[in-house]
Length: 179
Image (cartoon, rainbow, N blue to C red):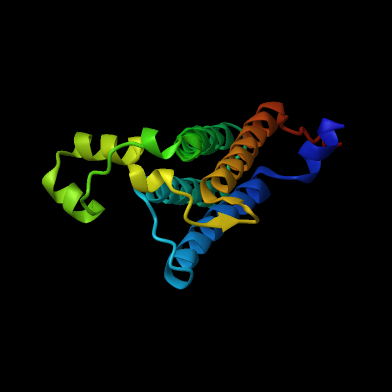
């Protein structure tokens, strides 16, 4: 059964689908920010960046169109960043599940000022741990919070990356005999 799937869905097609999904997700987030006035919190911006990085790696993997080891390499990159995205989105969902008295303290500074005033390690720590803004559910997609939808998307992308790795590991070079 799995050999049928591995023979029909190529790694290149998988990378193209991952690229379209990631860029579509970032595009929808920007659309929501501009037209629905959904202001992103630091964790939302971090998730956008991770989606963009995954999309770029998947696009390069699709253009490169490797066979075995290249697909394993690009699949590991996509899966690794997908796992990081799952962790960030899960933390965001966890923050949103907390009661208001347990929300983290807000830094009070916009990200641009925080980036200019803080060292890079402190900035990344503040962004990835979240602020009180991150704990509020400002907008929903299909009736569930945006970070939860984002986490499901990361799971889907990670499955696609693992699929390309498994497909590459099962890849056998066909030998043609000419008589």
